[in-house]
Image 1 (cartoon, helix red, strand yellow):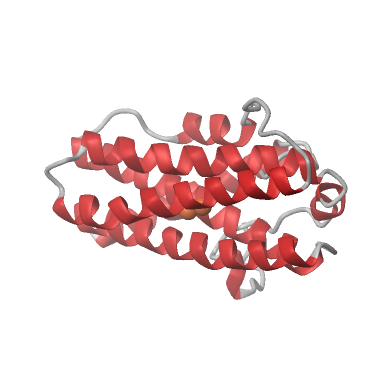
Image 2: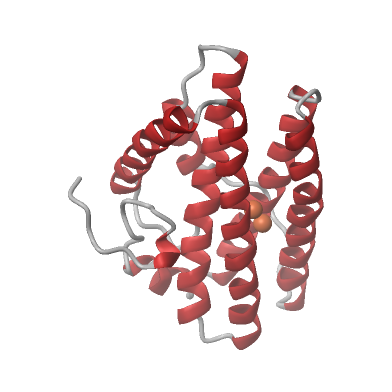
Length: 202
Ligand SMILES: [Fe+2]
Ligand SMILES: [Fe+2]
């Protein structure tokens, strides 16, 4: 794909979110909050799984342990925002974005290669989430939610950098960079095929 001018909060993503998304999302705050709560839960769960699968990787354990607490803190705060508005958490919804990403992640290779696949998938989700939080921060009329989304944008952008730098601990930088570019292309292709839905974070 031809290089296009990207602002710094697209975090290297190849395809900016369809501008219609935030307009529909702001009219579906209950659905967005419920879906978002589960994104935070999955982020925490994913870090816990990585720690359990790779307990010998000290840097990974040290970097991801506080992220588990942070993501769980985000989950708590999203539930609070739901309750404040008289909404319940509700059931987890189908996550077509993560399911599609899962399919482009290579399942074979060495233990380190598999780890890098998982770290890069997490980095992609964090980058896309940060990009969407930026849209919510800038466009949502509800001031308290807008401030909340700003904080989340900053936090998830930090996690994105953590995952990318962790990947470079376990495989050579050139390998990680090349795989990262492939996955950015794949993520953009997924974004093009997904419907623009105002009841999903992704
Ligand atoms: Fe989070
Ligand atoms: Fe995160």
